[in-house]
Amino acid sequence: MTGNIVWLASYPKSGNTWFRAFIANLISESAEPVDINKLPPDGNSRASFDAATGLDSTHLLPEEIDRLRPVYYDRVSAASRDAPCFYKIHDAWRRLSDGQVLFPPEATRCSIYIVRNPLDVAQSFAHFLCRDLDRVIAEMNDDDYYLNREERNITRMLPQKISDWSSNVLSWLEAPADMKVHLIRYEDMLRNPLQTFTRAVCAFGLDKDEAAILQAIAHSSFATLKAMELKSSFREKPPKADSFFRTGRSGAWRAVLSDAQVAALIAKHHAVMRRLGYLDEAGNIVDL
View 1 (cartoon, helix red, strand yellow):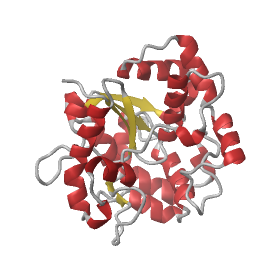
View 2 (cartoon, helix red, strand yellow):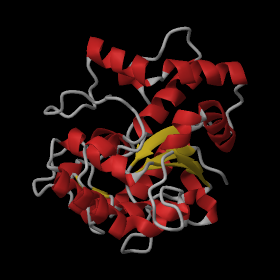
View 3 (cartoon, helix red, strand yellow):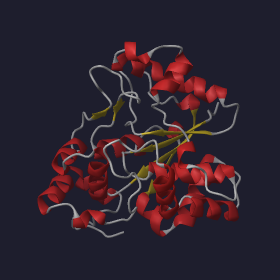
């Protein structure tokens, strides 16, 4: 039986919010862009988890939360009444210690995995977290990296095992076939938007024509999203960051990362970077 959740999966700062804005506008088909604070939800929302399970997750250990997340997602899928529901996640795909799959295939309609050059991810993630680039690169290279795993367990989002960049990517690209993973590169969203977004729409089975897709692309452009953020703010922006939406360009890392920082990322992730076209066979960086 096919579930109803479309997982919008990615390593952080890889284009997930941009894609959610596209989805919101595609579904709306309004003549005006959808408010940026009304995008498809985060699959790690603590409030949504608590509402679906009837529990107070601040009283649970991260491992206990993990064991209940498949139950949460099954309930979300069942409640959507055969309509696709879109959930943003940054977790690596994985099995839990009790053998459960974190993202149950029974709840899954399909999975969209969005990937971005890790060199660009690093500079964008550092800005987002207001952290030193070297620290962010170390986290991108850490196979046990978590988001929101605070000792007091009171963050707005549930703990998420992100893992290192390559492991996050491979966990989804090599997930079982019943996860129905469709890969999108951020750089293709920039340079071939109609083709890239159309293929994604076909993957999750919405019946939308080219005109509707083009309008959704226009309504979710970076210029539009940035203008809305300047006018009314964006609730997903970290308090310390000056903005969430910046340039949305490819290759911005060249003005930010040092040679040593580039080398540290490539040393860890060269195999997956080559697989995805970010490095050529000789190990040279490819401009996309």
